[in-house]
Amino acid sequence: MKRIIENKHPLAIRWFHWVNFPVLTVMIWSGLLIYWAYHPYKIQVGSFTLITFFPDWFFKGLHMKQRLAEGMSWHFALMWLFTINGILYVGYTLISGEWRYLFPKRGSFKEAWQVVLHDLGIRKGPLPVEKYNAAQRIAYSSIIVMGVGSLLTGLAIYKPTQFSWLTTLLGGYEIARLLHFALTIGYVLFFVVHIAQVVKAGWNNFRSMITGFDVVDEKV
Image (tube, rainbow, N blue to C red):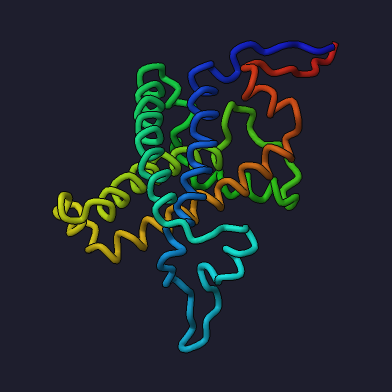
C-alpha cells in the first residue's frame, strides 16, 4: 500500500533550490570565461605539475572562446540574484525553523562517517530515519558558508580599491582570488556528489523536490 507524505519539502525551499541551481551553473560558466584570461593555478610537487587548472584543451573542448567582457557581465549580473536568493533562503530557514533539519547536530560529524560507509556499501546496517542525515546536514550547511565566502572574496577581487579593507582582511588580492577559485571547485564537487546521490536515491526523491510530496510503501 502506498501513502503520500505531504509537504516533505516546503514550497519556499523548492523555489530557492531551483533558482539557485541554474544561477550557480551560469556563474561557474561565466567564471571560467573570466578565469581563461589568466589561469595560473596548478598543483605541483617540486618542479613536477600534477594538475593544471585548466589547460587550453579544456576550454577548447567546451568550445569556450575567450570572451572576458561577456563572462564578467554575466558573472556580476547574476551575483546579485545569487546573493538575494541566498539571503532569502537563510532568512526563511531561520524564521520557519527549517534550520533544525539542516544544521549539524551534536555528533553529526561522527555520524557522517557512518553515512559515507553506508553509501560506499561498507556498512550494511540501516541508517537512522530522519529528513536529512548527518552528511547532508554538514554539506547543506557548508554550502551556506561557502556562499558567504564566495560573496566576500568576489567583492574583494571585483572592487579591490573600494573594498580595500575587505581585500586586506582576506590576505590581499591574490589570496582572495585563490580562495574564490577554490570555493568554485568546491561547488563543482558538491554538484557531482549531490547529483550522484539524487540518481542513487531514485525518481521518488527527485520528484519530492519538484512537487513537495513523497510516496512511500507501507506494510499492511
